[in-house]
Every structure is written in C-alpha cells, then in structure tokens.
Amino acid sequence: MKDLPKTPVTSRRGRRGFELEPHVLNDTSGIIDFLRTRRSAEPAQITGPGPDDGQLELLLEIAARTPDHGKMEPWRFIVIRGRAKDEFAAFAKNRWQELNAGEPLGKKALYDLIEKAPLIIVVVSRAVDHPKVPAWEQRLSAGAACMNMLTAATAMGLAMQWRSGWPAEDEKTFRYLGLTENETIAGLMFTGSLDPSAPRSDRRRPFWRDLTTFWQPDEA
View 1 (tube, rainbow, N blue to C red):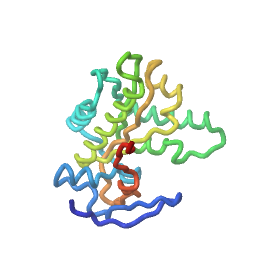
View 2 (view 1 turned 45 degrees about the vertical axis):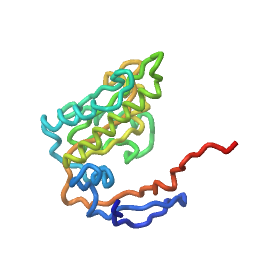
View 3 (view 1 turned 120 degrees about the vertical axis):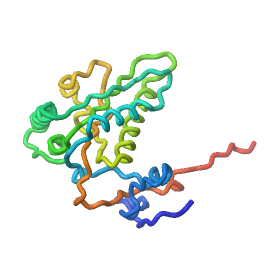
C-alpha cells in the first residue's frame, strides 16, 4: 500500500494525527483511492447550484442501499429546497433565538448554512421496537445511510456536509418538519456545488494503529 503525502498534526488534546496534502484529496481514480482520501466539503466551499433531479435521485438511491438488519428501513429522507428551504431557514433563525436568548447568530445556530446551501436532505431515523433488531442497531443503519449519501455526493463532485447540531435534538423542529413520535434526525445533509475558488484542506485524521489492538485470548 503506497504512502500518501501528509503533514503530522497534533490535536489540542495532545492526540497525534495527520492531514493529507490538499492535492491528493478526493482521488476518484479508484474506489480504494477515493475512500482513503475522501474529504467532506467545508461550509465555505458549498455554493449553487444544487444537484439536478438525476443527481438527487442517485444520491437517495445510494443512501437507501445501506446495511439494514431485518429489512427494517429505519430511515427516510426529507428534501428541502427552493422556497421551502427559505422558510426553514427563517424558522431555524427564530427557533435558535427562542432557545438562546441574547446569543448572536453564528456557527452553532446553523442558520447561515441553512440559508446558503442550495438543498438540504434530512435523514430521519425511525427506530421501532423489534424482538431481534435493537433500536441502537436501527440508528446505526440511519447513520450508515448518511455516510452512503455523503460518500456518493463527494464522489460525484458535489459539495456536501453532514451536520446535526441543535435541530437534531429539538422537538419543535421535529414537529415543524413533520416527524412522528418515534422519529429523530440522524443528519442534516447540506448539499450544493463545490466553489472552485475556495481553498482545499484536510482535517486532522488519527493513525489507525493508535486505535487498533489485535486481540488474543489470555493463556490459561
């Protein structure tokens, strides 16, 4: 396995890691090359236009092709674009101010990203009671749907960022988007085109060896 050009980076907590050099990111020359270099878009890189209808259908098809024990389909998708997205942005701004009186709008509010992104796909987790498929496993499947979608969008040359934040924990937002009692938000997938003028950079990645043990049973 060839080594990739990287720069050592230590986190603020003292954990070592690395960042790949920008020119090798999102290498689509092969599946393994792409998975090794995949990098989500930063908010500053997301611009218009959003995906066309064919691209959107492909994203949703790939998102639904995810591990799903028991064929439960414990997720669904809400597409928000156009005027509906403008109304959602206005709701999010008002709701943030309602929940955080006196705090300025900023990254935590997500309002700027909701307003800027051409399209948002809300991945809804809908875990139910099942004798063989626990709720946590159903939620993992919803997360896998988010990852499938994110990987596909990046491979297609689109800009997508997977976020959660306060809307994923707010009951009033759930009701506003039409979620039912057993549903929550697994991810807000902010989607658009890559701004060619925005700089590219990696984020700190851990070394897999620091996180891996090769288990052996204790000798009797």
